[in-house]
Figure 1: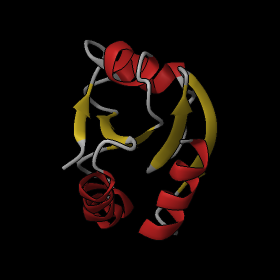
Figure 2: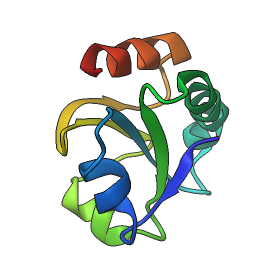
Figure 3: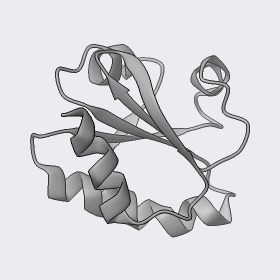
Figure 4: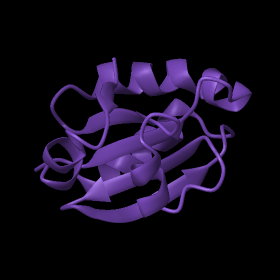
Length: 106
């Protein structure tokens, strides 16, 4: 299951992480977000300690969404050493593609 991320834990879980992190910016009302949600959770379960996967609800964490210029969702950001290294916009991506991007940063 993916971590629930917000302004309180984003620094410690994402920016200070010593493993790569995939962050899914999503919202309850977003159809494509609901489609990719289970894929994100499966990926989190598959990775073990190699990387982290988290979700940010843009309605609950508007400051984070604004900080990373989230304009459309789902919006997936790949972090390493506190920096954004890659991104995917939309739900047209497979679990294997996401895993490959994340592992490329490990």
